[in-house]
Structure formats: structure tokens, C-alpha cells
Amino acid sequence: MTPNLLIIVATGLIPMVLGMAWYHPSLFGTAWLKEAGMTQEDMKANQKPLKFLLGFICNVLLAFGLFTMVTHEFSILGLVGGDMEAINSGTAAAFLAEYGGNYARFSHGVVHALFAAVIVAIPFIGHQCLWQGKSLKYFLIDFAFWAVCMILMGGIIAQWGANPIA
Image (cartoon, rainbow, N blue to C red; front, side, top):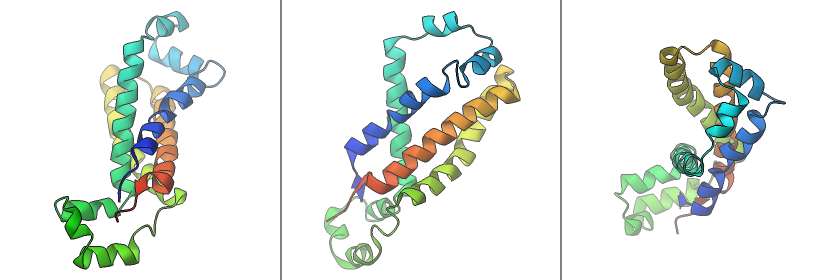
């Protein structure tokens, strides 16, 4: 399976859209700002178009990383060195014909994304919080945000983010 680039790029919007709600003052925004030691004015002054663009690029990289985790057939392409002729013939083709797409389900992506959130997001956010002196509350708000983002992204990518190798 190769990435459906439209879906991969589109899932890069999920953290941006969810972030507008998650960090809104009526949800977790007020608590997060307090724990971050920031004010609403600090936050607004920090919102620059370049940061949104760079954030979106990071989100797309995350989406592609999740694609490699939730789409097992992608590994086969690596095993044959990206040789599409080898994929379309012999053992690889027979394997894909029998098993390809068996796990192209939203729920499958959710499981892998949750696993990724635990083994990737917790260490990264945890290190930041430890070295920046942030509280457990700050950690939990950010981790829950990224876990929800990754779960939604992983589910969508597993369901629609792969093009069958043919």
C-alpha cells in the first residue's frame, strides 16, 4: 500500500482544528495558559502565520509516521526495496492478494495510534515538562490533546489513507 497523499495531508489539519477547540478558554485553554505561565495576550501575540505553516508541516510528518504504523502492507514495499515489479509478482503479490487490506479499518488505526501516543507522545511531552518545570496538569492537558489527535489521525489513515498496490 502506498500513501494516499490527499488523506495524509488532510489529517495534518486535525491538530489545528482540534487545537482551536481544546485550547479555547471554555475548554482547557484557561487552565493550560495558567499552567504555562502565559496570558491570553501572550498567546495572541505569539500566533504568527509562519508558526501555523511550520506546525502544519509537523502535523503532516506525524500523519505520515502514523501511516507507516497503521498500514502494515507498507512494510512489504520496504522489504523489496521499493521495487514495484517485485511487489506485483511472486510471493509478495500472493501475500498482498491474500492479506492486503485486512486491517484497513478505523478501529485498527485507533489501536496503533493509541500505542504510538503512549510510546512517543508521553516521552516527548514528559521530557519537555520535566526540563521546563511544567506541572502534571500541564502534561495531562497536552498529552490528552495529542493522544486524541493521534487517535483520530490513525483511524482516518487506516480507513482511507492507503492506496492499494496494484
